[in-house]
Structure formats: C-alpha cells, structure tokens
Image (cartoon, rainbow, N blue to C red; front, side, top):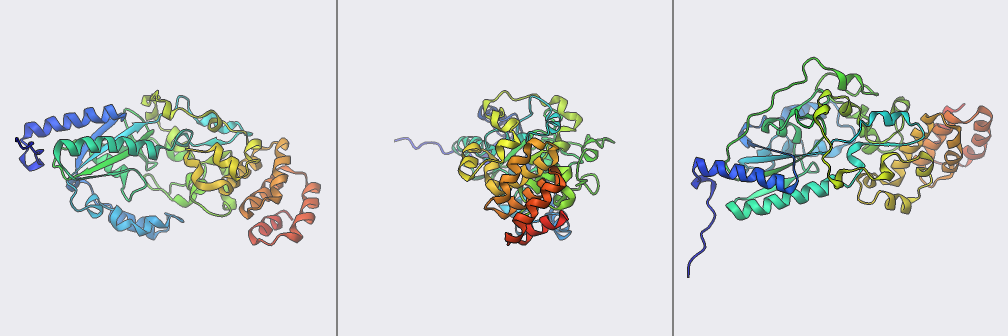
Length: 388
C-alpha cells in the first residue's frame, strides 16, 4: 500500500515552489471573490503598540473599551499569534455606483453608510477567507488563522505593509485601484512566503478628507479622535448624542461616509457588480417618517442581515430622531410627537430635542407641561429643561 505524500512544509520548499504557491494563492483569492491580495512577513510589519497606548491613553477610543483591553495583542501580529510568519491580506471592493454625498441633501430621508446598505460584510468576508484557508491547509499542511475586523488586528497598517494600499489622512486605507472603498480580511500562516513591497503614501498635499469632516474629528492629518466621529457616535456611543454634534449629524443615521467619499482616488473604485454588495432599496434612502414608526420586531425584520441590526432599535431611533430634528420638515412633527411616549428613554430624549427643532414655541410649552411632570429619567428631563 502506498503512503500518500504529505504536503511539503515551507522549509522544504524551493524558491521556485514558493513563488508558484504565491501565484496559486492569488488565483484562489480571486476565485473566492476578492479583488486584491498581497503578502507580508510578520517580522516586516511595524509595531504599533506604543501608538495604540498613546491613542488610548488620550481617551480617543471613547467608549470602545475593547480597544484598551486588546491593545497589547493588537499592536503587532506576533503579539496575537507568536507562530505567525507570513500574512495574506485581502481586499474586497465595495465602491458604490453613485457618490453618497448628495444623499445628505435629502433631508426627509436617512443616510446609511455605504458599507451597511447591504449584507453584513463580516459574514461574507469570513466565508471567503475560510474557503481559501481550507485549500491552503490541504495544499501545504500549514497552520493558520483567519481574521476580519472583529479580531484584535490592526488591518489598515497591515494592509499598508503588505502593499494593498496606504493609510490616508483620514486613517482609512486608500488604494490606487479601489480608492477608499475596501473591506479587509487577513490569513495568518506559519508559511514563510515571498512578500510584496509596502505601499507608499500618495496623499500628497490633499486635505479633502480632513476638510469635509462635519465634526472636525481629525486633530491632525493621520489622527482620529473617535469621540468626535459621526460613525462612532451613531454606532458605538451609548445614551444621548452630545449636544455639540447633533446639528452636524444632519441626516446621517448610521455611520458617515464623508471622509471616504471625498477621496480623489475613488475615481478608480468601480462598483464590483456583485449582488451581495448592491444596496437594498429599503436601506439606500429610507424615509425618516417610516423609520420613526419602527417597533423592535419591525426593526429586526427591516435590518435582518444588515450590520445596522447590531446597534438595536433604540439607539437607531435615537439617530433617526436627530435626523428628523435636522430636517426642517414640519411634516415629521407627528411621528416625533409619538416618540415622546416611547418606552426607551434614549428615544424619548431625542424626541424632545427634535420637537424643539421643529415645533412652534406654543406647542413646545403645551407638551412640556404634559410630559415633564411624569418623566423620571434625568437624561430626558434635561432635554425638556433646554427648551425653556
């Protein structure tokens, strides 16, 4: 009986076989649906531990406690997995068919970030990574781990080191082929493979992404204060949105694409054509009046399969009510009034704020006399107090 030949380990590979494997990895990545693939050796990835400590130490991570908890593992790939030698970094283009910025002028509609207008990319990207991983293990016998951005991996610096793009002044990855619209995933392996050259910074003197930010969330180029970022505020922040940011939010109800959409490199970011990344009609331009009517069951049904579902109905309606208050549309007063009796205090609080932006003074006075004496939540009472 013939014993099956075991896969060659990295140490046994000749340079020619190693290069051939890299070529086949590229083929496997494209067959799985990825648009870009590059490789980097773990030892060549810059250590970002001290940067992370400084960023967290300054409080710029806001309420994202996991950033502080995982900083030691997040700073360098070998801190997360000491056995890693080479990392395959993959990118999936999700460039929109149209510039999303004009949607900000549709005041009675909500604007959902481009990446969240379709299926949750975490699930799709992880499935594709696992497909490549299964093939690679069968082919080489290596050990590996796959990561999407829910893991303690600094994907953007990793992608830059691998040559997939560079971290722009907005701190997001920019690609000469795909602009600022790339989902990222990575495969950590025990293989020792030829690496690609890192990408250079091509931002030059451009400040488009910095200048367009509605809340001035960039203290300096290449620096982000998450506490001022609308994506953070609408998704991660709990409770009421700080007053200073509400007007700047406009009709952004989940995330913010301004700094991404302003990047001149986006002219190269053609739509992928994949059905999985085409916006669902209900998420492309949802009416604020309809969104304010959502109860928990309707919210879950509407956002099934979408990353929006993860923030929950109450936090989402908080955002929607701020958009309603910014709309200047008296037609939205009726659904705003209805939310004054919502079970969730964070919803009631922003309903009061929206009422103050839309209703005439006499109506505000009448409603305040009706609701304030019975309100027990301090956050809601504080919103009523501002309407004096």
